[in-house]
Structure formats: structure tokens, C-alpha cells
Image 1: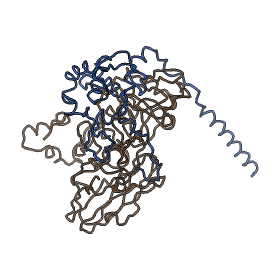
Image 2: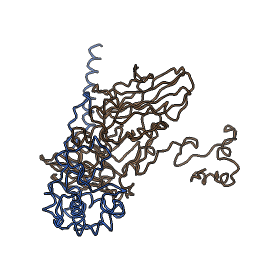
Image 3: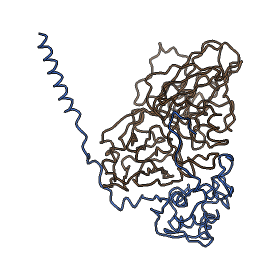
Image 4: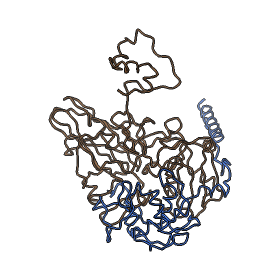
Amino acid sequence: MRRTATLWGATISVTVAVTGAALFAQAPARFGFGRPATPQEIAAIDIDVMPDGRGLPPGRGTSAEGAVIYAAKCAQCHGKTGTEGPNDILVGREPRTGFQFAQNPKLPHTIGNYWPYATTVFDYVRRAMPPTAPGSLTDDEVYALTAFLLHANELIAVDAVMDQSTLARVVMPARQYFVPESRPAPPKPRP
Amino acid sequence: MKVTRRDLLTGAAGAVVLGKTTRAQTRTPVDPTKVRGTPTSAMGQRARTATPQRLVRGNISSTPHQDLMGIITPSDLHFERHHAGVPEIDPANYSLLIHGMVDRPMVFSLADLKRFPSVSRIHFLECSGNLGRVAGPETTPGLLAGLTSTSEWTGVKLATLLKEVGVQPKATWLLAEGSDAAVLTRSVPMAKALDDALIAYGQNGEAIRPEQGYPARLFLPGWEGNASVKWLRRIEVSDAPFMTREETSKYTEPFANGTARMFSFQMDARSLITYPAFPNTLEPGWVEIKGIAWTGAGKIRRVEVSTNGGATWAAAELQEPVLSMAHTRFRHLWNWTGGEAVIMSRAVDETGYVQPTRAELLKLRGPGTAIYHMNPITGWVVQATGNVIYKQEPWG
């Protein structure tokens, strides 16, 4: 009897193992759900710009052109010269030396003193500004506004043309102070 | 008195208009065992007298932790942080594009996403700016730390979709982009995307709420909330971070050594006593101190409670199940015999990391440090009168 029972047990185990394998099929390499994206539909929403300039569209603009657009569409929230608010203060270079934002939390984080990449200005203005009509600015207008803001922050000359080749070459003063995540892993104290 | 839609539907507004009786008076006199109750309904509602509400401050609303029990945050009380409002998205027109450094750029409809193998996981989501710089004595738990909430999230693993499109070997980062009016973008390291990232379409057993990203969002367990991009419309795979506004101008932390830190994603261990707290008043006698603890590092191992301002600490009871990267409920029985007392809690996570005091944190980071990733021990003062107020501490 004892031997028979053991045999039965073994038989049941084998059956369970086989059934289990059948129930939990291996995932395929690909499911085949979804459809291929066309180049046109990618281009329609692929609006991001990278620090090396990848993604910048054709077009151009200068500070003088940007000043007109700024006065009409931006000044009401950011102030006449970009220093008044009430929304984010965009213009200002203080502190001229060092990066003492921790010691002085009241220092505004402006484009000139805190933004590490000029391309981010173009990317953000194009996607999100102005809040009343986001995405409504033409690429030329965004280049012009970017030129206006960079010139107001004393980062480019008054007559500099911002375009696909020049914008990514603008060196931002804050760039040197930004570091990637470097906290020690827990359980060590984490600054 | 505010007239709600429910008042109008039930006729209680009549009492408001007459102005002679309160709503409560019109609703409570009957003996419920003598009158047949309301019939079944297609959509349930909270009890009329249970009225928790998010605390709304501009484009932020906080979870009222003082009103909640357990570890799941009701979906309609999940905190909100929007950068350009809540978009209205027709699920029939929704699509997610994945392109860039992939072999097969593809578009997935919501129905496509739901055809893939699904997973459900219970996780907290916390804004990295979840501690107010200015907090007065009359600060509630929701005002102090209401930008964390826990839900059961259901969706498809991002790794499944990335396998479907064929990520190229050089790819190290991806861009996640929302279809709100901010078209919000964040860069996410490929390692996280392939590890435990979800494209979530479910929240607590139903479709994700519009405020949380309907119809589908990115969800990065344990990481700062801003990176879990809502209303996800596009993922671009690349070989470098994109340096978007939200990861450079915002969500970076300046330090006293003259640098600013980017991509500090993981949320560290924290705990919060939710009772007793402002505006509770205690009677002398037994008090069950209750609260929540959580960590982006995994599971909470231990929560300790002090009832004497941190002089001594005792282990609190943890409510099972203790889940990874989820709110964990703790309780501690305390016999308050009167007199002023300061109650505090501190969390220890599975790595052994101990939630720091504010002084320890500020010493590590520098005075006047930024608002992000602040997880100090916080406390409440039980005054001799029994009134409970927030224990204020200087920022730096």
C-alpha cells in the first residue's frame, strides 16, 4: 500500500507540473499589438529640443523681434523687463560669482543665473507658453523670444540671431554648477 | 450654507431656502428602523456626514490624511499637482507614441495598451516638494504632508512596450511627455524604465481619475511624483537626458557647496502622525497614536514613536501587509496623563536608513536649502489643555 501511495503522489506531481507549464505560456518576443508610427505623425508631435540642439526646427529670430512679442504676450505675467513678476522672474544675473542659492533661498531662479541650458528656453516656450494659448507661437516667434530673453540676461549680443545652429552654442553661466544625482544609497544619510 | 448638487437632488435645498432649519435637522429625526431606506443605486456616494475634502491651494490639492484610515487613498482624495490644469481627453482618440532610438516606432491606442499583460501594484506617489517651508501651529497633517497618496495602480509594464518597439543598444534615457496644456516632459533613465515602470490606466480598481492622468500615465514607483508624467502621449528613446525645464529650472536642489543637484528621483523614508494632530483636542487617558510611513527604498522596517519630544522612542505596531513603496500604517498606544507633551514619529526602511531630524537634514544640505526632498521627523505638541498644534521648527 505504502509503495502504491508514493507512486500515486509522484504521478499527481508530474501531472501538476505539466499542466502548470501549459497554463503559464512563455511570453512571446513580441505581441504584435499597436501599429507602426508614420514619419508624419511622429514629426507632428516630436517637439522636444535637446541640449546639443537635436530637435531644433528651421527658423530664426532676434532680440528686437522678440521684444515686440514679449510685450504683447509675456509681460503681463513676467513683468515689463522680466524682473517684475508676478509669475517666474526670468531676467537677472545676480549673483555674478558663485552659486549661492542654498544660502539665499530668496534669490530668484532666473534664466540668466539658474537655467543650465539655452535650448530649454526654446523647448519650454514652444510647448507651454503663453498659458492662455500654449503651442500657438511660430518657430520664428519662439526663436525671437528666446533671443530676447537671452539678450536681456546679457548672454548674447543685441543683434545675435538665434537659429538651429547658434542656440545650442550659447553657454549658460549656471551650467558649470549642475551635477547629477550623487547621494549615497541608503542606509547612509542622504543630503 | 453651501447648496450642493446632492441637496438639490434630495430636496434638502428647500430647507436652506426657508432658512429656518438646518440641513441636519431635516435629515435626522426619523428612527431608521421605522422607515424604509433609500433604494439601490447605480453609483454609491459617501455618507452625508462623511465629508473629507482635499485642501486646495492654487494648482495643488492635498490629501487630508487626518480624515483617512488604512493605506489606500480614496481616488477622489489623491493629491493633485498640475502645471496647466486637468486636460479632458477622449479615450477613443488617445494614443501613445513610442519612437526615437527604437527598431519599430509604434503607436498604441488605449485598447492596445489593455491587450498587453497587465500588472497591479499598490504604491505611494509623492511630490518631491511635500513639506511646506512655512508651517504655523495650525497646520493639519494634510497641509504638512498631503502631497503623498497611495493607490493600487494597474497597467502594462513599460518594459513590455519597450520590448515591443525594440530599444536600440545605445539608448540610455527616454523622454516622457504629457498631453496637458503644459505638454510636461521629464527624462527617465532607461534602467528604471526597464525595471518597474508602468504605463498605468487603472487606479483602485477603475479607470485612472482625470486628475491622475486619465486615460494613461507613466508611473515610476518610489520616485518623485513629477517624473511620473500624466496624460502620457509620447515616449522618445534617446542616448542622453533632455534637460527639460522641470529637471533643470525646477525640481533641482541647490546645496551650500555651490552646486545644484539634478535627477534626484528616489523619495526617502518618512513618517507622519495623522492622529492626534491639529485641530484635535485630547481628553486625558488612552490615545491611539496613528500615522503612515513610506519609503521609495522599499519596505518600511520599523516606525518609532516618541511621546517626550524625542528623549525616548518606542517601536510602533505596523499594520500588515507592509508593502514595498506603499504607505504603511502604524499605531502606538499612549496613556496621556495630562501636561504638555511632544509626540513624534520616525521611520526606518528596509535598508536600515533612519528618517533624519530637521537639524540633521539641514546640516547635510546646507542652510536655507530648497523645498524638494525634505523628509524630516515632524511632531505635534499636545498642550496641557489637550489642544494639539504643529511643532514648529526653523527651516535653517
